Length: 591
Image (cartoon, rainbow, N blue to C red):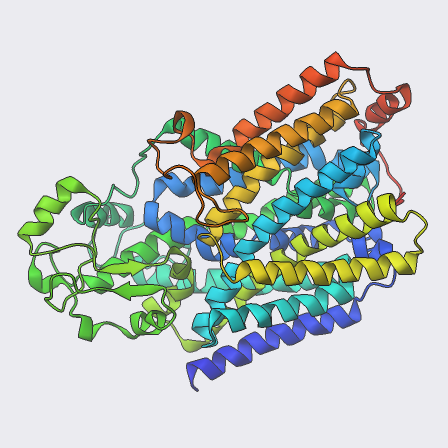
């Protein structure tokens, strides 16, 4: 059977499954639309949370970034996993104890201020819109290759799928759809990894294969990879390079950003009681670990396969480089998407792939007759291309296509629900029209969801960077704005509304300002005011790492302003005291 037809069949079946679930689990009330009626079991909620969490960045980009850079990009794994520990221990049970629908609702009630609530809505929308760009990038990349459509058409198709099950089902429909999407994406990720690990090391367990002997060379796989990449002028795959301060701040930004992501936090409002919130976080970690333990192996093996594809012998000999006309089918396939490009700079008709940014190695490369790197490979394709690189069966390629779409669509749905809930519940219901009926609010929520999908599709047409890099910036914004105010709202009785508002605005403004200054990634892409390189960064801190600084500013401003102004009312202090004792909770009230 033709590979494209097989891809359409597998992807089409997965879409049919999502549609069926959405029709079966459609929301009939605001409680079902916002928090799935508050009755989702912990194991199911953990699985849905894992799907909500493991976005296109986790499925598509993370292993690609690890493949390209190596050890340094393990920060993604450490930061994202550590963030879930923070979320489980410090936030989830306490927020569930409070018993509300949304993050802005908690902030507005805890800080007894509609202004605080509105500022939280603004922060949530900026975070979620930034995050959803990465998902739309993933949808476009996947459709462009596997279903042979252009990226724009792919975005419209993906948006239509999300529109159907998210607008119809709300959180109830999204929850059950995400359970199915988790099964699809984890299967799609691990099966190719098992095949590739067997091919390269003879070990069917990818995390163990990473530390096993490379069958072809007879030496440990990572040692073989280190030798190959250093022979091509790259840093050793297992070495740490760059600023340790920047690496630490980036990891911390991902950790506290994870614990402050609104679309993840609202998942813990869907369980029946407080203890279930903690169990949900624990199960989510288990389900996430099934992919995250495999990702480093996928990245390393993908890098090794790419190099082995291009060089067929000692790298320093002219004849070892692959003639372009003999390039494998997988390169031809991905060239059609524009995500792999070749430029024959020395006119020899062969593919030279090396680090031409390494001045010392360039002198050596010139002795080989090389005139610059000739092959450019987009990070986002490596996981998707892995089955083709390793010559795996066609059904595995189709499964990866379905998995990549499941990862992107599941997270996009969660983000869009967070945006829609903030607009309909926290702005329309609480600020603009408090007397709106439940049916009117449900209609407003669905209209808000449709509008959010339209905005996400528009922004996805011109994404500002790799999916994982864009998502990392969203984490920085969550770290700088939402996480501190949630922590202070739970653990400090002294922080008042004035301090919370000042802190959120300070953290958000300084972080967006820093990112805009160096990257221009928001609102006006390409308008960075200063060159985006380490020599120009403030104290060597990259824009993606600046969320930690923004969080520190948020905490500091909130405490200084709070201590300079009147303490919160007694009933608010009593409320904080009661929330810190997470024993027993009824259903979410939504009031």
